[in-house]
Length: 87
Image (cartoon, rainbow, N blue to C red):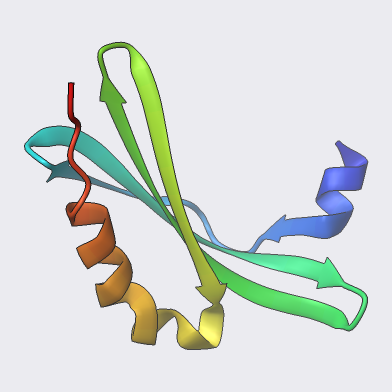
């Protein structure tokens, strides 16, 4: 765990939003983290969509630099909403 903590540092608490994707109940987790890289610390914004279908967990993750998150937020939402579960 110390090795992971030395690379990833959650900068904020995780925000949870309930929504539907393709008519299926889902959750969207958003959080900011600091990633320690060779060039220094980089702030990153992540959005994860969690969907459970037929006892299977599907996680779709989007990430970008924090300063670009507003620019990509709508695109990530459009992509996530385009997912469909086909049987």
